[in-house]
Image (cartoon, rainbow, N blue to C red; front, side, top):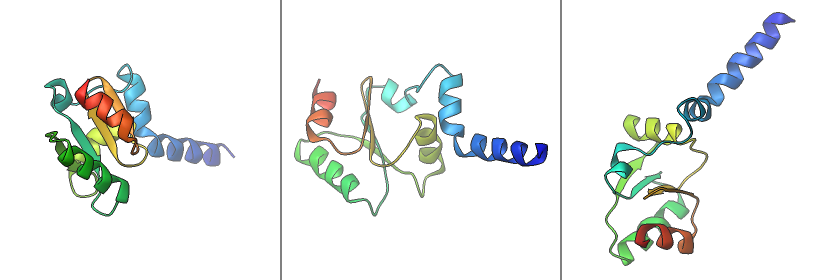
Amino acid sequence: MKKIIFLIFVAALALNWGKISALLSGGATKSEFAQRGEVVLYATSWCGYCKATRDLLAREGIRYREFDIETSAEGAKLYRALGGRGVPLLEAGDQIIRGYNEKQILAAVKG
């Protein structure tokens, strides 16, 4: 019984490592790119909302750095450190925006 509980604990720890790491470091910390004032998009190539976010940023003339979390080890690591739970995830200033919300994105990148 103790082995089963231990295995469940280890599995839960592994599945939630990004969140745990963020909590241990004092919450979600900004990436070095966001600290420099860059807008950072964590996305995938197949995500429709990621495409909509790219299109919105392009339409508004907003420069950004993008990480494909499936092909970039650095991007995946940064995404997990932010407690990534789905895409798109956007870092803009002091804000982290999860999902596609045009008003929220524009307020963050232009604010």
